[in-house]
Amino acid sequence: MLKTLKLLAILEGVSYLLLLGICMPLKYWFNIPEPTYPVGLAHGVLFVLYCSFVMFVGRKEAWTMWKTFLALIASLLPFGTFMADKKLFTPQAESK
Image (tube, rainbow, N blue to C red; front, side):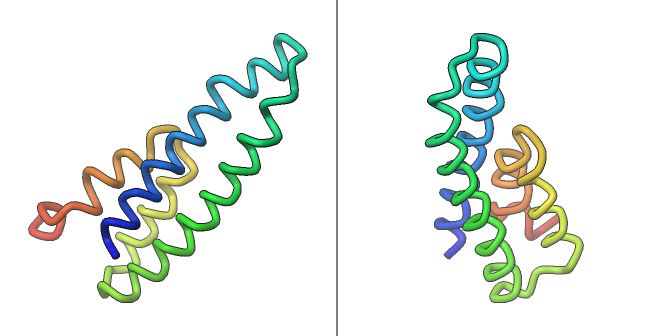
């Protein structure tokens, strides 16, 4: 279950960076809007899956509300899900 969450975190983070770093500049600076739709759609689906899975895993693993909140906030920040993967979703994070 945690491995799936880690994978979703990475995929959601990559889709977010693709959308912000490549598709939005293409759309607004170079007037090439075509890549925005499929990447935006993929990011939207991954975002919803990630947030839903955070809630599911948080409840199943009896996370504190703070840890669940941080994992959800991570989805809103560039590189946030990568940090959540490293700091929140690893066994070392449990001991701290």
